[in-house]
Length: 305
Image (tube, rainbow, N blue to C red):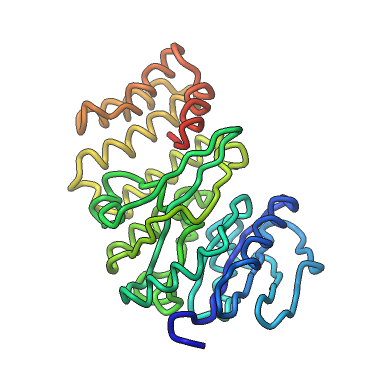
């Protein structure tokens, strides 16, 4: 096998979504990639379906249970520990890859020497499809602190195994509820070295309706505060810090905790008066808007809070 197309292991963490999982696995196995593509399905807090295993030499499927911390972070790390490929890739069980994804990304890694490559996405929400493609300047450490860069979705990530286990490190299993674990990992990846980009949409992301975080506001608040403590670089970017503080404010507003919501909203506005999440949190805390309505409107544009 040529250096451009080394063996790849694709990790799909799943929990009780068999129809979506079947679609995701089929898209991985249908890649036009010339090399070997191992699919590692990790059942998180669910009984593994051994019938999905396949010993096809070019497109093998390995089925395991998450034997690490329950949740997405532990499941991804369990899959990485089982993976045999020189490259690791991740795909959420409700997403689907386009056939050329791995080939184009492996070629970009070979051409740039980068350890990590991402691509664009098609965001599917109801009857709408929104295409979002990152630029190279969008995935620097400074820009990722400023904004989440949702177009660099975790289902687009391909990383060299040596970097994942070494200078970047695996997914953080200490993050409350595994919320934002992909954002934390991207921040660490960008701090470790340049991230390459294939500026094309190569993944279809099923947005919003399948997320188990849609209403877990306590977990969201705890996880975001954890990220602020872990990444001191936020203190050097008032707008980036205000963005996360605004998200925390909104979570408390959705929980009906008006005092906490207002406190976090004021912190956010002191850092950036433009931070719209802070204003939304205040409106929700005053019951002018409902959190569910705001969330639905955000999802309709292919974004979150």
